[in-house]
Length: 179
Image (cartoon, rainbow, N blue to C red; front, side, top):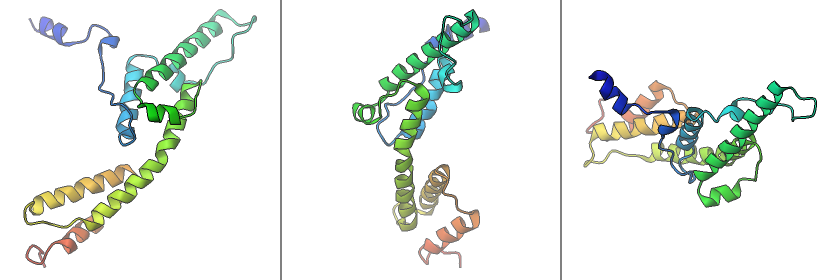
C-alpha cells in the first residue's frame, strides 16, 4: 500500500520534475540563478556548464572524443535555449549574444553585479533609517531589522552581532530602551 502512495507522488522520470523558475526581470537574479542551475542539473543538461569545451571533431578524432564533443555541444545548445526562455525580453536583448553557455552565464553575472551593489546600498539606507512605530511593535521592528541584516549578509555586507544589538537598542524610543 505504501509503495502505491509513493509511486503516485514520485515523478516518473527526471523530466517530470519542474522547479518554479521565475522569469529573470532584474530584481530576482539570485533566486533565478539558483533555480536555473538546479533545473539544468536535474534535467542533466548542465554538462557544458561544468566542463570546458572539448577539442573540435576532426577526421582523426576517436569515437570517445566524438561522443564527448556531441554531449558537450548538446548540453551547451539546450542550456542556452532553456536559459533564454526564462529571461524577460529586455534582459535577453541587453546580454550579448553568446554561443557558449558559460559565457552567457558570465555575462548575466556581470550585468547583475552592479545591481547587488545598488541593492546593498538601498538596504543599508533602510537599516539606518528604520524606526519603531507604535502600530507595529518592538517585535516586528526587530524582525524587520534582522531581515535587512540577513539580506545584507547574503550580499557580503556583514555586521557584528554586538553592533546589531547596540544599533537596535540605540534606535528604540526612550520608553522601550532598557537603559
